[in-house]
Each structure stands twice: as C-alpha cells, then as structure tokens.
Length: 195
Image (cartoon, rainbow, N blue to C red):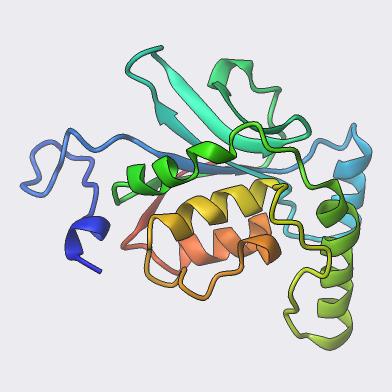
C-alpha cells in the first residue's frame, strides 16, 4: 500500500502536512437512550454502551454535514440534521486519511436493507460465546446482502485498504470492536469529540 492512502490529515493550516482538500470525514459512535428497549438491553448485555456507528462528511453540492449509515431503514445517506437524536455517550473520530476510495467502492450499497437477523440473532450469539469462552467468534448469522451499522462502516474501512483491515470480517464487527480498532491506530484516526 502506498503512503498516500494513509497520509495524515493534519487539521492545523500552519502544518506543512495539512491538506485542505482532504474532506473532514468522521466516524461516530453513540449509545441507545434508556427510553428504548434496545438501550436497556445494550446496558444489561454490554457495558461498553455503544450501539450505533456512522460516517459523516461535508457535502459540497448540498452543503452541511451528511451521514452514511445503516439503520432501521437500511443503508442510506441523509443530512446530519435529519438524523434522530443520538444517545449519550457520543464519540467521534476524524479520519487522518482520504477515505473517498472506500466510500466510492461502497456507493452501490446505499438502499440495501438492514440486517435484523445479524443484530438480533448473530451478534447476541457472538456476545454470549465471548462471555462464556473468552473467544471472539465469527457472526453465525451472516448475510452479505444486508448490513448492520458496524458492518457498513467496517466495509468502507476495508474498501479504503487501511492497515489492519485486511483480516477484518465486516459481518462480525461491532461498534465496540471498531472503536477499539480506531483507538489502536492513532496515526489513522484522531479522537475529537467525547461526551
């Protein structure tokens, strides 16, 4: 892989490595609010509290920040202002690389349905196996034609050919495992928001 793909996206204009043409792409994470059943179950089953992940980026044509994510309506792109209130905690990372190649390769996934079977069957089995054995197992309810939120973000990262993604299985990724990947690669991701 060439060094151009992982060139740091410096955010200080005075820095000689700063590239003002690189889009400000961010990957966000949030927890479900206690007011929904998913939020209560998430806190009982997984103390890491993260339930949803998405990509956000500035759009020069429409203006403002836009989200690319998989949610209950499937894979879609919408204005950040149209996204329902995100729960707390809320964490965002700025990509220090040009992710446009990964986003372009995943453009055809927009409109695909959400993978409820993976979320409601596969990931709980995976989580239970982890708690019982300590082993990280693959998601047993795999469907490449449907996406969960973390599967979509992992697919984009893998399509961008980032270091460490060559062995990543997007269908088995969770928001927590993606956040761990980003924290493990500070040369690729800058943690910018935490609340």
